[in-house]
Amino acid sequence: QAQLVESGGGLVEPGGSLRLSCVASGFIFAAYGMSWYRQAPGKEREFVATIDSTGRRKDYADSVRGRFRISRDNGKKTVYLQMDDMKTEDTAVYYCYVARPLNFGGQGIQVTVSS
Image (cartoon, rainbow, N blue to C red; front, side, top):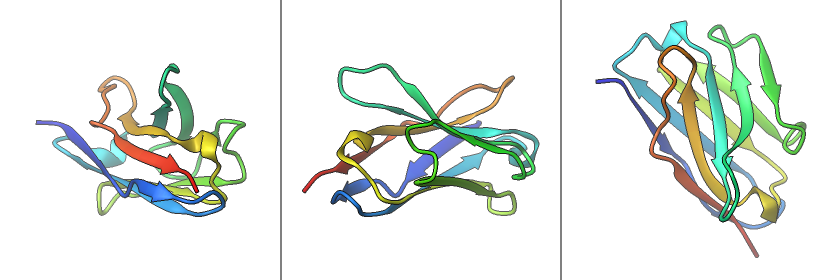
């Protein structure tokens, strides 16, 4: 059964850092692009970052560009999201997604940025 499991969330102060991990199972991880999305309370889910299957091509939402970094380890079937210089507006549930045609996400993990 194909599955994505996020970890690494929690509470951090403004200006702090967190690293999210998403471990994949049940499909050929190295064959698919991966993305991170987030959903803040009362808002629609929004794109955060994406990485292609090789790890060479990456793209970011303007709101996180220069502060967040997406990476992957195909040997560990894991995609990461390093979040630095975090802001209160980064507070959200973060989801990792696998690209089409699989096109599904994990259960999400809470990230809270607050002093």
